[in-house]
Length: 336
Image (cartoon, rainbow, N blue to C red; front, top):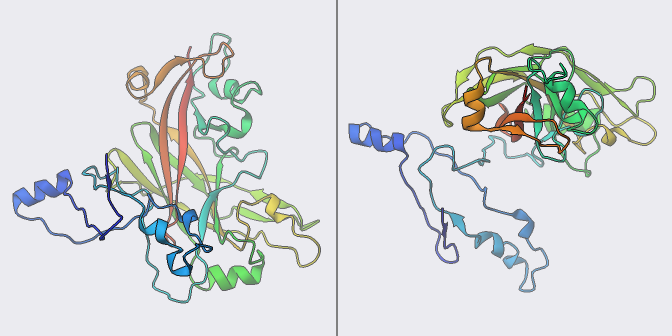
């Protein structure tokens, strides 16, 4: 890996992937699409108080070293730039993992992973993997998914306008999201099919709304259903993509009194849609896979209990807004 010198003229560095070279050798190479990304750029370096004046505010951004082109299709753009047909959009949505709801909502903890527990495995005391992981001295319940579970325990994904400049009211949701087509009715979930067999997503009758009594809290009601229509991902080897429902959030700022809904949502402004996710561990995942792709007999919590695990990434993308998030998943089983 290397960087290109971006201190002078703009440079176009292009290379062909393995597929591109193959098609060129066959005489049928043709560019039909292209994508742009800005993974290297830190927009926090935009300096509105630059001593040389406002014309130099973006100087550091423009001179940021750019990575040279890769040939691997899955090692180039993680967060691609997107285009919108409307030119009157003042705010664009973002996507976030909810870390504020309690009980069944799961998110990455201190080890920056979400554990997907293989509950078909038992330790010498006949305790299943998920129960071991959820023990307070280990991963903690807020970080553990139970594979294929449809009634409880899920990752809650939200989209919306993440700014405190616009209150999260129903009217603002209509103005900035619904009426301009910035709400994702579906999300595409990409996962490594060597380790994960399928996705469970939120059903269309799931709700995320205000507490009917106080209007200050939030009520989350989620049921999961198995995703249909899986297909091989075009850009990442061994990955499969499956669609799941996006449901419009009705968690709004109360009409009177203080707004405490920010204590329940990771979106500060008008909320768009949400979905909930769980995953099914591939039934063929065996000893050889954990040895080849992961680690075995690891005392990861320093408490005398050993686990086998494989780390992988799940990608979630809004099909309307193209907002994308990566979720670190640790497929885990207790070492029996």
